[in-house]
Length: 216
Image 1 (cartoon, rainbow, N blue to C red):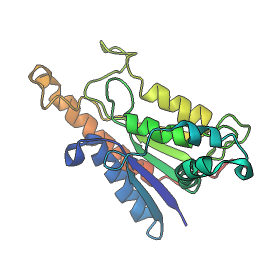
Image 2 (tube, rainbow, N blue to C red):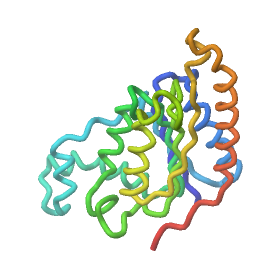
Image 3 (cartoon, rainbow, N blue to C red):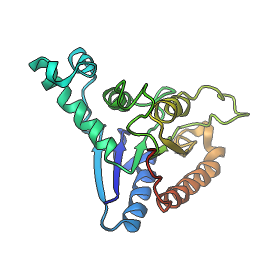
């Protein structure tokens, strides 16, 4: 059964641009996989706790040698990792907050980042799966813009998801989302509207691509 793991992190609810695009992807994916399964986590509404010492060190301890505290602390971490491992595609809404990813997404990554299993190993357990990241942002950080180089969303997620986890990462970038609300950006509204339309089309298109086969 095809499985989609869908993570949203925007705190803007129905007004969120990243959520609109992840919803478009999910709708198209479900149409392609009517018998498929969706695991959904709204990390803004129900954030996972920050990784604490017991859960962290339990990851480097053999299951039979873990203390009762470590076993309890690792339970959520193990569940989050298994959800990711069981998915064919991981869909992530990652709006830019203060030049980087939301802290709720960082907390999820900290739990899933397990040395010897999902990371820092010859065969990461997530390798070969596809990740689609909707990296929305209020301005533009493209080459040639005044803030080029200040984007620590895409660079960070290419490293963690792509190089460390071994995922095939695709980015959809709705930008200039503040243009309709900031008078000084009024002339950029047409560019925002084009970016949003292009992002919705890209989401539907990527949802129809066949999932990659995991690396053996």
